Length: 203
Picture 1 (cartoon, rainbow, N blue to C red):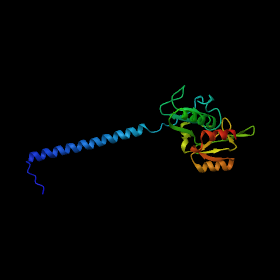
Picture 2 (tube, rainbow, N blue to C red; picture 1 turned 30 degrees about the vertical axis):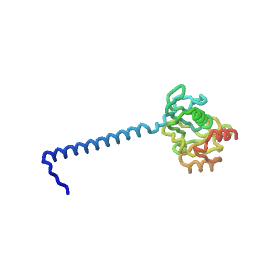
Picture 3 (tube, rainbow, N blue to C red; picture 1 turned 180 degrees about the vertical axis):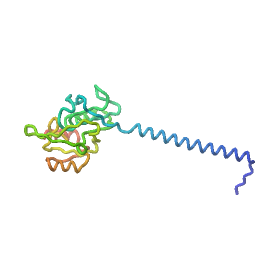
Picture 4 (tube, rainbow, N blue to C red; picture 1 turned 60 degrees about the vertical axis):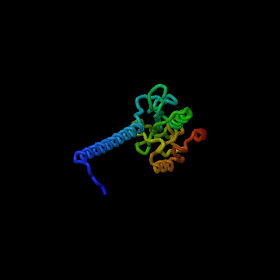
């Protein structure tokens, strides 16, 4: 049986110490939670940027926005392109973003985010010139989506700025509908390897 033979002052003293200890513990937990929250927020992916304004493709030097087809951008963790800060930017995926990505992956560059035009969220247009059909280009920041979550239409009759390209859709059903109407098939990001791309561009 518990027998408290301490005097009132001693009991009050102990209670005060316990209260203080509890308060310190709660404070420490709150501070730790705050630190964890800050770390999580600081490690979130950077947002895509607007690619208008005469930016030149980091793979081929062509001006972005002057040519048809999807655009892209890659943010790297500890590296950046030679002539400007992140992201690296591109006016084509098949001859710009993906070749650059594969080359720098071999160099050990670590990506923070990869964005491509999302044709599920834009009002795209198809135009015909000399018998070829081209899909419109878009440069606003809100026209980009996570490249790793896209479904890409390949081998369709619709071309990008440099010919054959990969047409990205965040909605797989949109991609299927596009392929059904314009030919081709669909792949996902992990299907697109360096060897796959080489074969695709040669076919």
